[in-house]
Length: 109
Image 1 (tube, rainbow, N blue to C red):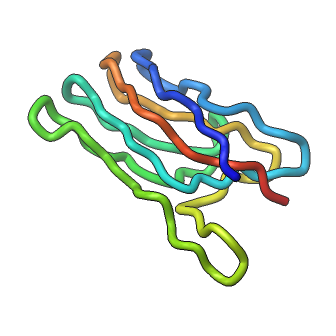
Image 2 (image 1 turned 30 degrees about the vertical axis):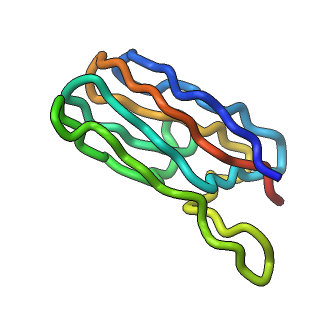
């Protein structure tokens, strides 16, 4: 079972998407992100944490990033990445451009 969070941000810098749980990582199973203009989008652990995806360059004519749900493996649903233990999931924008979409995730030990 995965959780979903809407992406609806437009502020330059770090934007919180999902709050961490102590002792857990946030595993991202898939995402769809669309920008309305030119911006670099980076998914990362917390404000100063590990970069997991990006920077992904968007332009007004090429503004979508899609990571479909990962396959089911022997241990269950495979993810694209895990945040650092106890870290929030943040999206960082290089400019104040509207970015929307959704992210499928769960908390894992």
